[in-house]
Image (cartoon, rainbow over all chains, first blue to last red; front, side):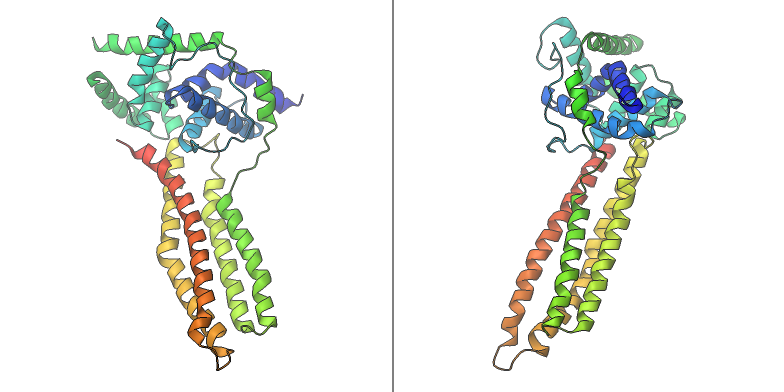
Length: 157
Length: 192
């Protein structure tokens, strides 16, 4: 296996839950999550050759995933043959406590505007304002202002 | 109260990720399929322009050989097609250079806004400025200059208008496709 193939497989396995979470928060159903997940992996694969280990991996993963969720045409023909994700749970349909909790979080976040969704997700993940700013492309000060407004919006829901 | 609300959201996020960590999610089969994808993008609008230019550059001189129209008209048409092709490359270049690793959401929004503006300017200003004189000249060359006296020249312009309409519809379809893609991205970023 080539170096880049090993790096790609490792990154995917280590960060699969982060990638899935982003796709889940920007989707309406499980099929859309699967499409976005596969498309994100394709974009990661396309970008992995230029990836420098010294750059922060979380930031890179979020950029790829968020840009994919933003730019992917939802009805686009798949570039790879459809390979289902290996999942025992469906957060859109299952009725156990964990799925209900995930669904409640999805409903809250999904009502926000695209950029606001991205900001609040990154904040909930524990990223600093500087890190959030570097993913979104705004200053830390701007992140703080936006986050204050988003929190007010969320409280009213 | 406020902190409790957001703590609950944090816990929900942590629980979601913990549950996902237990899942395999990506099989070896999926990873292998992904790695088969070559690093190429589908650039239908640009590819369409290249095909149209190549066809034009081949067929237009043929019409001059058969004396349907003059060599000057062929040369100007050829230059016009090349100009359109270069402009298409120029407008598409920043979008194709968008790097998923280094581009943040603001950069994506900036590039898409510029792309849409250039496309709209092209449709509203450049297209009429090129097409109206070209069609007029084409009608003169095809229907009046070399036509025999017993044929109504207005009838001869019909193929030009039919061909022009088909070409315009195809061009407008690709224009809308490119602009709508950029527009939907911008709408998502600008939604309140």
